[in-house]
Image 1: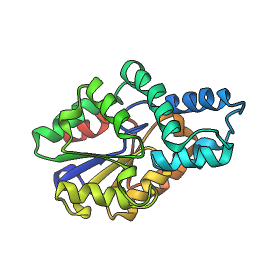
Image 2 (image 1 turned 120 degrees about the vertical axis):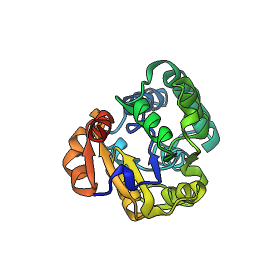
Image 3 (image 1 turned 30 degrees about the horizontal axis):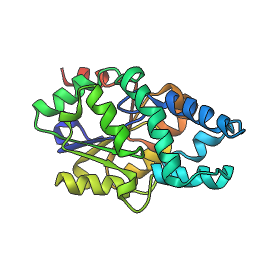
Image 4 (image 1 turned 90 degrees about the vertical axis):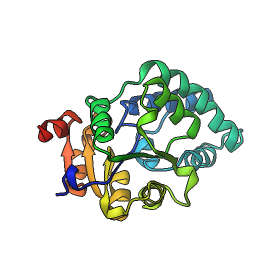
Length: 220
């Protein structure tokens, strides 16, 4: 298993990986669909796992026959999420300390998220960690969302690092597959939202951690 000493860049997913926010999206989906007379299907979160922000909006519009444009759906979701991101979403345990370690040791850092740009910037700024990342990329900037490797390859290219020199952190199987298909070392991180997927995550990933303090402890 690749160790941090051998890594030139670390790339993070955002929701459920860097920040504890997956609960928020299910809440938003329930509230949003409720306005149009729909209950939230139990398999919905698994179905949209890995989709880009625009891809998800297209899926919702088509599946639920919503009387809204794609841009209107995205704007509503953005407005619903930004307040929660700024006031209710914390970093994962040990995340800031781990980001500080990477910065102090000259290891580049990037974000590869399926989320929308406006929301990503809001949460990174509110948590005071935007400056740790040289590259922040959303799935809307590449041809295919996770589990395709496009976004991870794109971030590595923008960071100027070869895929094999990158380490990825992800919280769900689609993201883990995206990192593996990009030829990167992938760690799965524990998240309450994906607890039922733990066995699958462990099988797909190169390593599994409960929080970022585990990695820092290994460096002592």
